Amino acid sequence: MKISAQHKADYGNWVSKWLVYVPGTLTLAFLALSWVSFFLYIPAVFFLVIFGYFAYAYYKFSPAGGDMQARLRDLVLKNLGWDGAGSVLDIGCGNGALAVKLAKKFPQARVVGIDYWGAEWGYSKEACENNVRLESLDGRCEFLKASASSLPFEDGYFEAVVSNFVFHEVRDAKDKRQVIKEAIRVLKPGGSFAFQDIFLYKRLYGEIDDLLVEIRSWGVGEVEFINTSEEDFIPGLLKLPFMLSSIGMIFGCK
Image 1 (cartoon, rainbow, N blue to C red):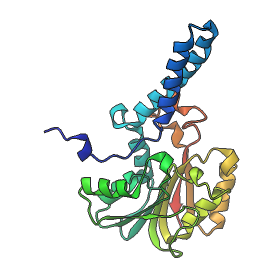
Image 2 (image 1 turned 90 degrees about the vertical axis):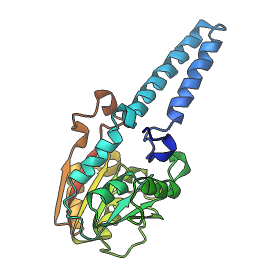
Image 3 (image 1 turned 45 degrees about the vertical axis):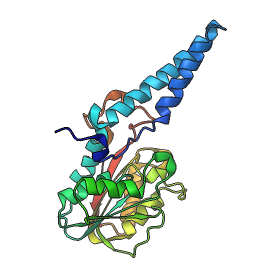
Image 4 (image 1 turned 30 degrees about the horizontal axis):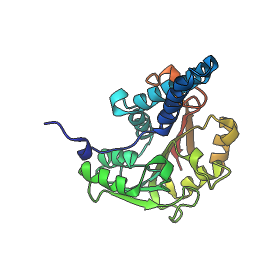
């Protein structure tokens, strides 16, 4: 029996539909006006290329196109050295996709997700809670509105902390390294963490070796880095500088 779309969990897409609709509309507009001047074909082709690229990216990130978003989230869980005992925080939970994966992998764990849920992303607390119900995980996940720059938890509150492709988007933190420090703050000594973000983007994080040294200076016992942009499942077209070329994983134990 085929499940209708409204009864499937919806975790959104990292590529906004506006990045597809706007250049697509502009392409049609310039083509329609090209009878006035042949030179209007130039912006039409320009916007057509942009439309094609983001339509391709949207498709590849979607479940129909291989669901690369899910595969990148799986890398977070793969590198989280945690046994599932206690509670885990998902920073920037979006529509709850990673929180749901955590609840499924660690059935005894308490899962908490926080997000600021900006309207431009189409994510919401209501969507998180609805997805949890659709995944038959009622009572397993809790969602709170909060900023990653100022988490509403005491020091050492969680046994594990994760985040996926979020830290660079925290607008109320000029220094993104402080967002990492805040995430580490709420982790118990001996707790595990795994953060994936554009850590190779030097304008935000500096040299990766220097970043790891700084993280250790916060009392972190073990920290490692892997360049997840080199994963084989990521197509070359999505490894461009403005897409996934700078992503990496910082993980370890406090």
